Image (cartoon, rainbow, N blue to C red; front, side, top):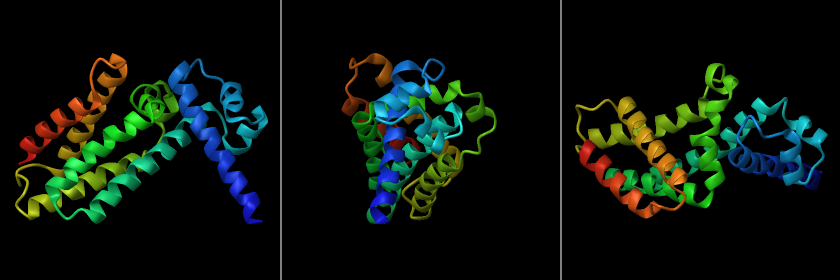
Length: 196
């Protein structure tokens, strides 16, 4: 019984990983469910057992990626007592994940905007959780006197996301012109000096 459940999870995750790659390489509009199924090593019909349509697959792929991102940030929050180190590690982790999973990074920065359903109808709970985690780090840093109390934690968390997203977009588009560690170090300096 457990083995059958594990196979089901593995198949589901294989489809999500294949979807991230196909959407990033072909673009949301040109990608086909059959492309995803082929890369995942499953029949086209199997994809429809788990996902309603291409928009649903895109959203679930985003949620799958964001679960990992949020898990990494939560781990930093729970295990790093220094507020400044939390921010440093958060920024480093963001770029490390992008470097390790470039298709996932491309999906988040480019392809999600191509889905009308995602942009207009989707209640983005995973992204709200991401912003809440960063906002909590900022707020606790303010209470400890490490960060400026004049800043809104919510606006600051969105600004940090904005700079991370935009520089990741630049890194993806440059195809290796910029080194990810250079971008990470520059962003870290801007953010830490900005919120100090």
